[in-house]
Structures are given as structure tokens and as C-alpha cells.
Length: 246
Length: 349
Image 1 (cartoon, chains in turn red, purple):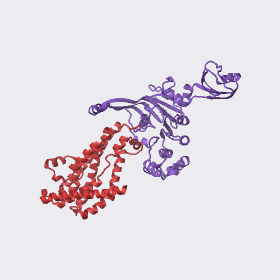
Image 2 (cartoon, one colour):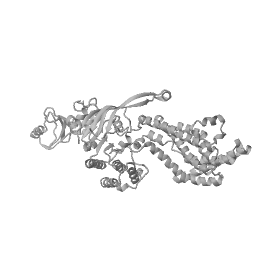
Image 3 (spheres, helix red, strand yellow):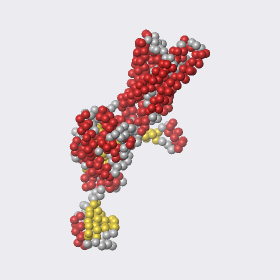
Image 4 (spheres, chains in turn blue, red):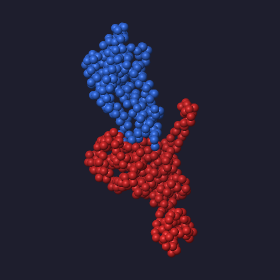
């Protein structure tokens, strides 16, 4: 079972990159310098976005299933922090995916899609750092959605809305510079930009060196704000908890 | 100061009132209606270190809610709980490292992992020193025979094996207080007895405080000295198991086997013939009014009797009568939850 899942994950990412690149190629055939960005930059952007997505996968129904089944009581009976437990669970499976899915997909992508190297070594290192922050922003955002299961029990709709917003607004599917200006300006005020767009832009050298610091501080600020909101929700949830099933 | 102190503990639940039918479902969705349910109503009790206490009551009486508050999973609406100086809800993690819990209905073990891996994980979670871990594993193996299924995944265990594995898991870190929720449910008589023996042994050896919630009165009778009965969120009895028998189990049944079948017999006043089978007659009387020795002497002088046995009612029968409202509680003896009378009956085992 695990083996099937593993190969399916690798193939899925490759297919998604391939399809999206094919779409952008078709668009570029009509206009070969869209918005002043070269096709190979967009191709690298798309490949990176999907590679990151295959690691940024988190268990959206982990908390919900524990709350609705009442099994959360077994976790609360143990002298461990529930939040640390959920976090390590997600980080653990992400680390597993880095080793088992990202590395092979990355190697294939480099040959198949002619991935550009980072703009400079320094940008490469900053990209890595910013990608970790992006992961944390997404985690903190997800945590808020997950915590809502203490009130709503079923969070499928909320999770779906969240996924759609992240897909469109965080630059996971479309480089944000292609969005209409007013929408791009709006996204800059939200945490979504910090998830995929900021790290990938740094990798591609699209962020002026002077603005990188601001971009990273913005990511950290969003982590702090969202984590604080998650913390308040958790405190409220502890009193709200009603155990299902005896 | 007792190990567990519960003062004026109350827990309210907000229940969503669902109307019937399609129209009602739409109505509940748009204009939700809530009803407040008081699951635990202002209860007081205390438990000393090393005591084994049975927590009983009909379904929905509030005992699980109380236990969940004691373990820190649920927060009380009002009132206070002190477990060895800690508030279980505020210091959940610290409290959790000192308690253990066994739920007969659901396992605490990792479903897909071999039993041995669960114990290894617990060793890290509870930070159990290597030496203590090995000592305890050895002891559990001797008493519960867990070695025979150590390498099997939990989902493949039989109920009896799973229960033994669960109990060992709950006691691995030498908890000061252990909660047993229906620890013998669904087990056969031999397995039940084994588990009771084990629990008693642990209590005697490690002086562990234990709380039982169960519907199996034999569990309580065989392990606990004290019993707390909860009904509709309030404590209706808090005292020894002996005392409840003494107070409410006054009736006795004398089973007499006569040499020949008798159509009718002369009985002294107060003795009632409740049943007869072949040559046997079942006579019920109140122990306070009639002396057994007198009754036997009277019968043997009149009739030729082959065999005699006297039985007292089982606790289960008394409890059944209490639930059904057949026994009116004398507030002087039962722990009246409104006052702190419960302390009167804190009899350490």
C-alpha cells in the first residue's frame, strides 16, 4: 500500500508540472514575452511550486477525526502537548516526503523540465530559509481551520474553501505577477503571499536584494500573528470540548 | 489533605435540540436551539492515597463526566478538583504523568503497532527510567502473561489479550492514581477474575489509588472497600460496600430442603414463603426481626430437614433496587452532596 502511494505521489507531481507547463507554453506561443517574464522563468516557477506542494501536504482531517470520534481523549490523557503532537506528526510526514518523493521528483524535473538554478547561491540559501517559513505560515493557517472542528465538528467545507484560496492566492498555481493589479495588491495584505510566492520569487531573483529582508520579516510576522490566533482558539477549545461517545 | 479532593463540582453541557422531520432539520440549521444539561451537579468527595473506590451509577448518571474531569480532559463548569495539589485541567500534562487510565470500551494502544512498540513509545512519552521499565515489564509478564503476544499488532489481539495489554500500558509508568472504566467488560469469568487479582496485587504492592467505574458489581465487591453511587449528577451514596449491605441488605433467604414434600408448613410471623421447588422451600425474612438460629431451631423441631442454607442479597440486587427508587435513602448515612457529609465516610482501605 505504502509503495503504491509513494509512486503515485511522484507521478502525480510530475504530471501536474507537465500539464501546467504545457498550458503556459501554449500561452507563450501567442505572446512570447508575457508581462516581461521569459517562459523558462515561468516553467521553473511552476515546477518549484508543485515540488513545494508535494511537501506542503498536511493532514487536514487529523484533528477533526479525533474530535468527532472522541479519540482525542486518549491523546489528552498522555503527558504530552497536543499541539506539539499534531505539529510533529505533520512535520514528520513532510520530512518523509522530502526524502521519498521530493528528491526523485526533483532529479527527474531538472532533466525533464530544464529547471533553472537559483538566481545566485545566496538566493538559493535564502529560498530554502523562506520556504521553511512558508511551510510554517501554511501550518499556522491550517491549524486555525483545523481547530474550528471543536465548534463545527465537520470542517470539509471550510477546508475546501481554504484549499481553494491557498491554491489561487498563494501563487501555488499561477505566478502572482499574472494576477490583476488590484488582486495582487490585496494578496500582499494577506498571509497567502508568504506561503509559495515569496520563497519562489526569491529563488528566481524576482525580489530586489533590498526587499528580501522585508519579505522575510513579513513571513515571520504572519507566523506570529497566525500562531497567536491558533493559541487563543486552542485555549477556547479546551473549555469547549465535548467528548463524543460516552 | 486527601489525595483527591472534589469540591462543589458542576458540569453543564450545551445540547443542540434537534427538531424532528425535514422541516425541523432546516429549522435547527437556521435557528439552532440549545438546551443546558447539567451532567454533574455540585458534588463533593475525597479519596485518600491507596484507596480503591468504586464509582457506580446508571447510564448517563454523570460518572464518566466526573472521571473525565478528574483526568483533566474536560474542564469543570464550576467547582474545584485537586489531585495531589494539582488542578487536572490547568496542569493537564503534569497531572497526566501521574495518572493512568484503562478504558474497556476503547484501547489506548496504537492500533497498527506491535504491542512491544507501544510500550517503547510509552517509555519515551512518560520518560520511564530504563530500570523501572524493565522491572515493570517483567512483573506484568509474570502476572498478565503479555509476552505471548508482544510482537503482534494490537488489532490482531483477542479482547482478553488486548485488555491485559491495555492494563499493562496504563500501569507502566507507576501512576499514583489509576482510573478503570469497565475494565472487565466482555471478558469471560476466568479472565475477569485474573484481572481483578492483578489489580488488587498492584494496589497492595505499590499503594496505587484506584477508581473504578463499572456496571459489574462483582468488580466492585471484589476489589473496592468504598463505593460512591451517582445518580442524575448527584452523589446518593458514599460509604463502604459493607455498610450498604448492612443497611439495605437486611433481608435473608433461608433455603430448607425437607425430607418429604410438604403441602403447607407453619411459619412464624414475619417469615414469608417466596418460592418452592421439589422438596425445597425458600423463606424470606428480615434479619432485624427474626433470628436465624431461632427460625432454624423452630423448623428442625417440627420437621425433618435434610439441608439448610442462608443467603444474603447480593450488592447487585441492592443497587438495582436503589436505581429503581425502591430504597429510600436515609440522608444520615449517604453522603449528602449539598453538605460535606462525605468526609464522614472517607474510610481508608
